[in-house]
Length: 115
Image 1 (tube, rainbow, N blue to C red):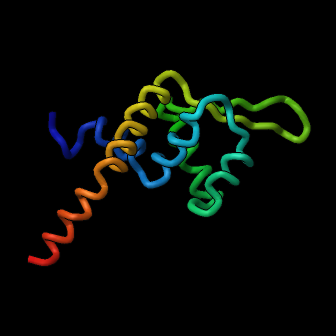
Image 2: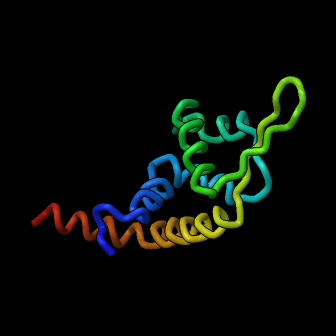
């Protein structure tokens, strides 16, 4: 596998982007989320524009399902696809590992910075 031009690299960048990780983690709680609820959940972290772009990217990659209800005003919901659920499981596991090992990493950083 050539790292520089492989399609897997682009997918990895989408999933592990700053906002992709957060969106997948929120959606991993299950069910569908209205855009406004997602925006409120992440309002202190991500702008509406970046949330929209991230959702579009994840939808294009097949991780997120966008469901537009034919009502007035439009009602849009987002949920993980089975593919997205698989990716989210790995991200959540990684986040849990990071949380569990954060003290050891911080200690290593302090040792490195002191040397």
